[in-house]
Length: 302
Image (cartoon, rainbow, N blue to C red; front, side, top):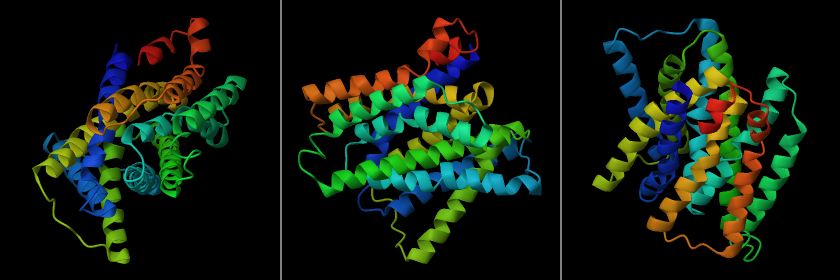
């Protein structure tokens, strides 16, 4: 039941954050927008934990890993995602992000020695064909440089996200709760972004309107504080590879919203591409369900 609740909340929240990100892109520079988001989220989490008497500072030996988590999950990845959203529809970015299932399986092999099963490569091949069809009209047909940029940045952001999963898994194994790691990680991420803003000379532009502020608060509180907590709790409970399966449903939610609010237009190739991309992800865990693995069952629903 807990895994199901973690799944439902994460899919609902993260499936809708992509459209909110597009509301922050525009007059406010990307670095500043991401800083606003994680500065707000970090303050909310640290203050809330302090008021509840649960604020703990990880030991010095764990600090480098908290910083690594901050760079991968709370700064670098979102710099990529926010920038990508200025080139391609938010729903398409979520499709790239759904390939975290493949990234996590490969990275778990590299960092934790977990065997990469043959179906991972099958799933990857199906997913890549799906992406080719989905992005075909925007990229292969027009050879649009901006579309390529959006595609590359979304893929890079997903790689950072996956690496952050590996660090979070290590931190959980070391006894650091996801809530504690997130609170300090978001704070460190905001500080890193502030340093980048200073180094690059990026102007700090105030939030321009209520729409921007609303999107920023939604992303900070729901997308970051709640979303990352529920997701990383799932990582600590069931492992990074299985937890990433919930990203299978993100594109369905995100592309639906993109159709309603961004005017995304479906084509037969795009529909086939989305189906194949989702199928590639589903291939990753269906065999586990058919074996009747009790640990995998909640994850599939999650």
